[in-house]
Length: 164
Image 1 (cartoon, rainbow, N blue to C red):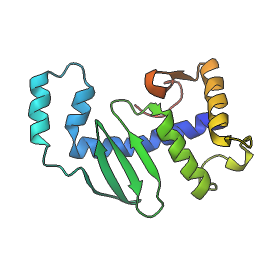
Image 2: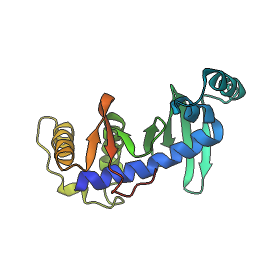
Image 3: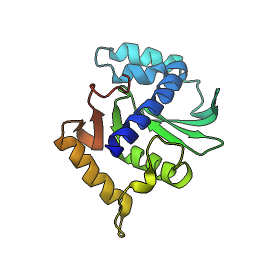
């Protein structure tokens, strides 16, 4: 259950990326919407082509460097170094590789600020985080708490409140 809480935390953090994409590059959201026509997508892309690929986003919690890529955006908090990377459209879908990168950061720099005791995680010696994640993810899949989608994306079941 530790992993589920960490996934839910990361999914919550992905909402900040959604906020930035919605404000600066709503065409990225439209790309994920299968009902949007090619002409509409072209119009939106032209409308937002002036938005810099890299920049800074200011929030009450601090400043974030952003980098738009493909159809998504990577944020890095300027003070803490927290990485959040997300591709639209659903914040309940977590990319396992991007999550692992965030989890490595959390274990290294923020072990006491998360809602879980990261020191209780049981790792092996060879590749501790990867092995623990694989085993824990499979356990959550077996319990129908998450669903594995293509491209190593994990869908957190709606019964677990993390937003949309």
